[in-house]
Length: 124
Image 1 (tube, rainbow, N blue to C red):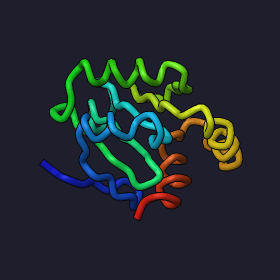
Image 2: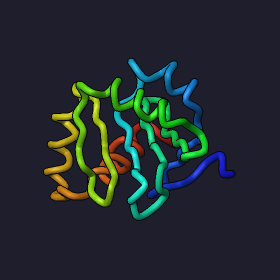
Image 3: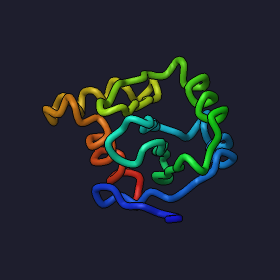
């Protein structure tokens, strides 16, 4: 089991549902859920916070925790990031994120843009 992974040069640290629950209401900028039909890392949930990037694999969380995330984020912006991935973006950063996405002319690469914009800004 890896405690960290690198995606596009950004280090994602393994986390737990308990740690995410502690930070979810105020610190998470967005998260992505890679559904079971996704091309890569099926079932993985990725989180971005102002202090870093985190991930949980299927064995790290329960179905109830995943439902809790969707319920919590019901007023956030859910975007189909294609290939069975969903990016859930906090409302207060959604407009600036979409502007950045449009400026990069990458309408289908939500997660890549998220990593490039926020990964370099907040993560080592």
